[in-house]
Image (cartoon, rainbow, N blue to C red):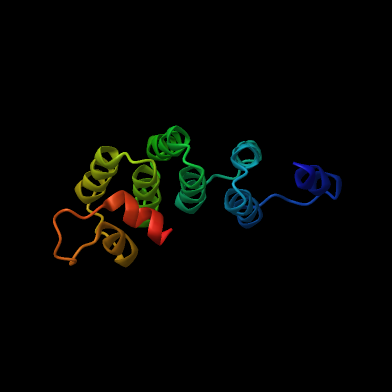
Length: 146
């Protein structure tokens, strides 16, 4: 949070673009503690997170295989009436597949369909749609693609 202290010292105004960019960078670097801290700073500053911010956090947690954190972010997102996107669901599904939890991945996929969200090309590829195999190893495919 050295960056945060610098920004405050320079009296930079926190806006949605700046906060989102910082959160996305922390997530890409797998620094979920700093990303979550930045989310809370963002909220205290009166800047409301959107679906993109939550998707970054969910993807970050999924990449470090912290699926409880990913699920927690998804629940918080939904509680705040922010609609998950296909990218949000894909991040969760990939995380569950990487941890070998195909049942939870399937439940998340079904939740996505029930919400009226169709899979995109990436998710279709990961799940092997059109491959003609019924015994497809989803968890191995998720590891190969990501």
